[in-house]
Image 1 (cartoon, one colour):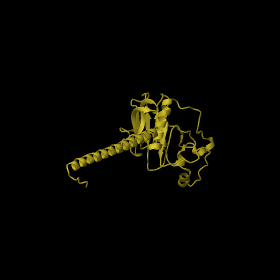
Image 2 (cartoon, rainbow, N blue to C red):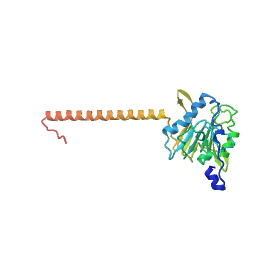
Image 3 (cartoon, one colour):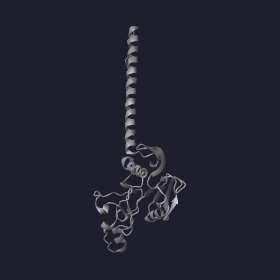
Image 4 (spheres, one colour):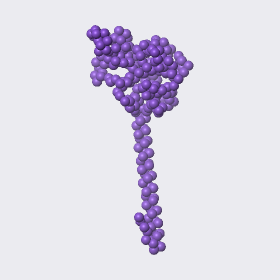
Length: 252
């Protein structure tokens, strides 16, 4: 609940929050190189290639504070719609995702399993539900804690229910497993797709597609020009043959 909402609901002035005492960063590194690449693969395409109806925040390894009196929960990636980050990200009150500032939790949280100690199916599972995150996805590429590589849960009456499909209808996105090469590494990756199931490309993939489309258009233009030249030469040869026979060709 935001400070304004608190005051409207209770009639009591909301207590001032001391952001300086909140731990928004620590010295813990990203646990492995695959997870770091996977996190970027979930964030970058949304900014470079996705066209939602409104602004959004997509971030990796950034804390979500549901209350100033509890430590943050830090998903590997989250997406929040209809919100906008402050321009000055250096201010302590803008460094993390504070639910009371944005008046809502993120719609999606994604965890990438790298060991059996992360609590993805335990404490994190329960806390994301309490916060009110609509969709919670667990990507377990080594199948360390679950039988399926990818499981997606949807919030229903305050509890998570396992989804049978990977489309996230309320946000117009889907999550898919993709075997391919990203930054020189061939792996099975977790990727975004749109509501029609089409893969949302990275910036580099988008630029490659644009270059390929431009090359195809250039080739089509060259082929059209070559055909026009061939047709013109054929017409000129026919006209010359007719003139040789004493027939004046009808150029119309």
